[in-house]
Length: 377
Image (cartoon, rainbow, N blue to C red; front, side, top):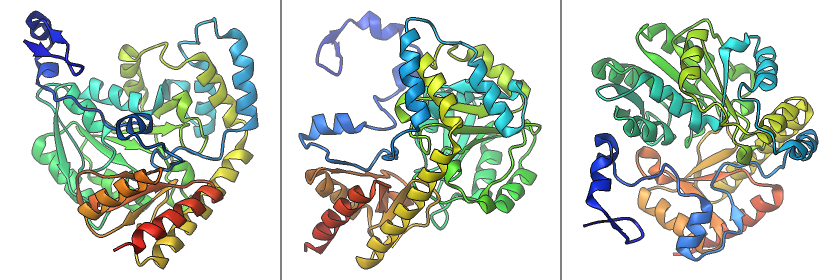
């Protein structure tokens, strides 16, 4: 008799009804949430610095829009997200047919994989980079091919070579990258695209694009059918809990997504707060400035302890502590002290802990705890 995760007996015929793909998958999730970590460890998290959330709140306009939207929460949302798509199209200088809204980038990654990857098809990503893409690939029966980082950055040549060998339809790139924080320059991306064959698609995850300086930003070109650009309101806008993301791509790609997306997946409140947040660019600029200051604080902290902070263009910093074993132990010790951070479990960056930029007070508290732990034999 097969048993479920809570020990209950599962009738054999239930298991036999599962698809072959699902039956072959191990029980897995891309990330264990901090709430679950608290429940499992018994340690209360006082400093939540592992989820790359924004501690700087949300726009006043977004808050007002949320409260106003609650008055009509008994209504269904606009399944076409018309107003939000219209605003985003104007912001990026594209047509509404080039925009689709999803419940965060994780949802959009699922659409990319579902549309272009399936049993017998391959997809390529960097080993140790944002794991949700790979989660979707294996979940839809595709073959995941991963390549190592080179000098703590995504390796363009290795990604292209792996895609060619595997005949991969999709190449995933987080730029800026998670968890390294590294970003390709526009020149590197341009050379990559110049070598990308017509039958390969690049899924360009730009969750942290709002933190990029002007010189590292590349204009979005939806006329190129090989690129799917992904953006989110979860980071600089501070709307992680609202779950709003969007994809920009050639209209033929967006039309394919429209066939399979969950049409009521982005709720009424989420749509309206995202729209209101776009109308408050001053708030966004303030957050970006605060995050840059926080990254500098972490760099100084690392330097003072003889550690290396990897260069970052995101709202987090990866601290190189020397080895995967040390990183694992340090993350455990921090959790025992009520500090939640992440670390990569595989790949060359497993030697690092990744720390989100907190408020000045949170950064000061984190620095105090880290200094105490690092000074212990």
